[in-house]
Image 1 (spheres, rainbow, N blue to C red):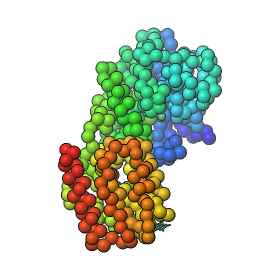
Image 2 (cartoon, protein in one colour):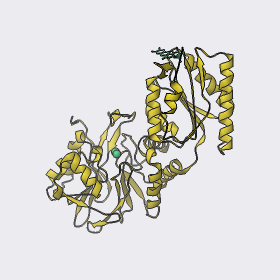
Image 3 (cartoon, protein in one colour):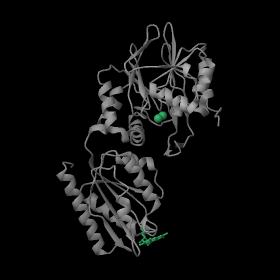
Image 4 (cartoon, rainbow, N blue to C red):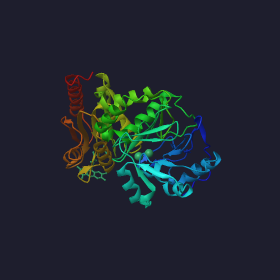
Length: 401
Ligand SMILES: Cc1cc2nc3c(=O)[nH]c(=O)nc-3n(C[C@H](O)[C@H](O)[C@H](O)COP(=O)(O)O)c2cc1C
Ligand SMILES: [Fe+2]
Ligand SMILES: [Fe+2]
């Protein structure tokens, strides 16, 4: 569905370099999965050299008119190269319209990206020019260098570095889902939170590959990072340092407790455990899965040492919302080191076995669960105190204080 009401205008970054993408203020769900509390943007960048003109990334298909109008407004008659850093449709989805409007343009991407773009958009093969790692294109006084960077966010991804202006165009890498009029990050706290959440949802599962990509860009002189979601970074170190800490650092003295409760028993257990851990100096983040934004949970998992999942038994297993959260946590592969399960049942349960079997990707040590019948009694609360003691001891032994 087109969104003609969006009026994001072209904005100049430097002479002959423009943002020409679209801000999507109202979008609330991404990939039919990820909540977008602050909307997002699909950034597209136009670069003019003395000889040639390049467009870097396009926009999500419903916003293609914004991009095309912006190019008209800048009087762009000819584009020589359209760089596709990534084949996901939020950046490549306007490929057919852009290539039709600019018939001389070559679509520039990795070999793998070309296959994916043909698979998805049925673009004619002769429109492509594939580029190797470190290959360059001269625009006339401006040089684009392509850096192959698989898994930020898919296997075909690359980054584009504009040498003379020291601008890195990394597409999803270093991005954030923020609809905002500031061209550059101005509110570092807001950006840190949005970027961390984005890291958790999009980048965290590929942490080891991302470490390699961080190494790869280490020796580049980068003044501006211009991602394809959210504001640009004129203090590149801010986001690179944040990525380094998320990718490399040990988890912190934090316990994340996603839980659900139908009739209050599991909730009472969670409340007791939160209090017991807090008294022992642990930071606790509690999420009621009946109402929580799953992106906040994902972000909390980025640096938590322990996850404790709380669930009542429903039809012999965990509550379906808890199963969903466990499935997601397993897929996101946080650095979490320890896990446990607490919860209540009525007559017979297999919730622990079923949940534990859902977490094979988490390289966690499982701490003895606390599963009780009905509402927690004094003896059950003591078991939760013991669980808190064990978590604290495990954190200390692992050097997490
Ligand atoms: C829809 C539904 C299905 C349930 N299925 C089971 C079950 O298969 N096995 C069991 O032991 N208890 C089952 N129970 C009972 C709950 O697990 C039990 O009441 C528990 O104490 C609820 O915890 P809560 O107060 O945290 O919701 C079920 C309850 C509901 C509402
Ligand atoms: Fe993506
Ligand atoms: Fe994206």
